[in-house]
Length: 111
Length: 116
Picture 1: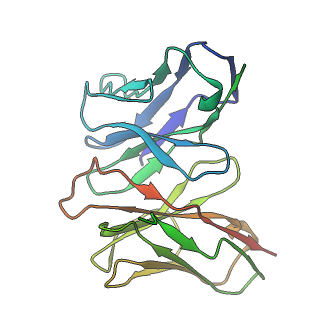
Picture 2: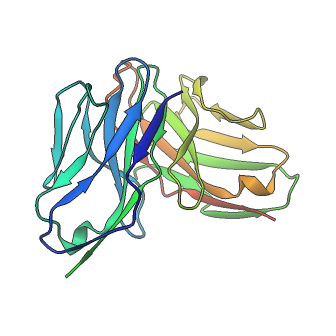
């Protein structure tokens, strides 16, 4: 079946450090890929998405590229801020509408 | 726009009982999906409702059932509750009428169910 594997956390970085959170997936067909973020005390919200191979999603300085050859969708940011502290979830959605989430990666950014 | 609203926010039930959770989708959305999120894990897909019918289902037993009403709101029912059903239950709505797989899901804050 479909699956999403995220790098295990928690991840602790200093402000202005570079961030990479790895995400790989297994799915039949050509899913859409998403990163969702959950800030403390808030619900899940979409951070960025990509719907086909080689697409790059971007938002709030975060980027992720849909790599079909490596079945990956790694999340990157060049300079993190304290306000980026949150739990990040990688997810896929198949053509049939079924979604699969990773277990989440907790990011803490220290000033 | 109130976004996705879920009720109740917290619930405590006894093993063997039945529970109903409710979800109102974001205005303009026609599809509701339900997820179970255990502590420290990602959301697990339970099922999706579109046009009042279950369109997709994850690996959950028949004790989990749902319903979608003409106004697109939805209910999740769980029968014969087990201790292991304790989790955060999330509802997400989206606009899926054209089967666009890239559609964004908007999540509610969830219902925290505790089974004792």
